[in-house]
Length: 331
Image (cartoon, rainbow, N blue to C red; front, top):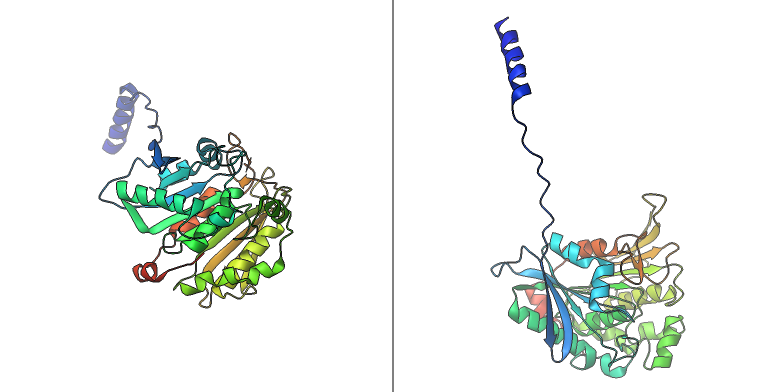
């Protein structure tokens, strides 16, 4: 009886207690976006809010596509949001119209296809500048790009295996698939020599002590860069590392909702079963970065979230110190 009376009394008191005013949740934290220059090449650098000098963080190099700029690319890919979540720095080099009328990276020129020269060397100089000025984990430096930026990312992965840990490419083309502007247009249509996959350029990374992981996204309905290029890119990468192209698993990622796009996912494994190459072929997608924001150009918001998937792929991998010392390439 006494317990019952206590419960009634507590209930009466609770009715007259002052309720705490509603407090909205704090807004999501945002990092800093810096405008910087290295060797006369402008770039943007995103520094997450959790960055601390005593805690070296991963770095992601993001290479925009034609007609884009760093602001457009970071908006479309939403990579800064994911970089904030995972405490990564993200750098966005800029290709000005003075270097290419459509602001494309000149990946097809021979002087941009080798180590220590041209645009690849300029990108690596930016990486070194960021490493000098910020606490960066040298074992976790990644590069990703869209279209022309993806082509340059492929070259960076092949010519600088001691700098980059893994590569991500959307709608790109294999390393050295063209030597002229006309050849670039032919390669984009899928018309480049099949012998290129097994050409002398594919011997470059066999001098390294590790396989360079690669994740690729391509739209099955891409009318700008033919989807066959993603298959040839994987084939070249597998040949470079001596991986059997048949050692793969295939999975269909169905649409999570009626407004999304499904994809076929091909995962290629090394001799001990580790997933080292992965290719997403997105149903119904054109020339775009899948899963991005409609506020940026060349995005397909309905596709798989490439930025999130890339970071998941990247951050599970790092270069071992011994492998960094032994990795060399001649471009």
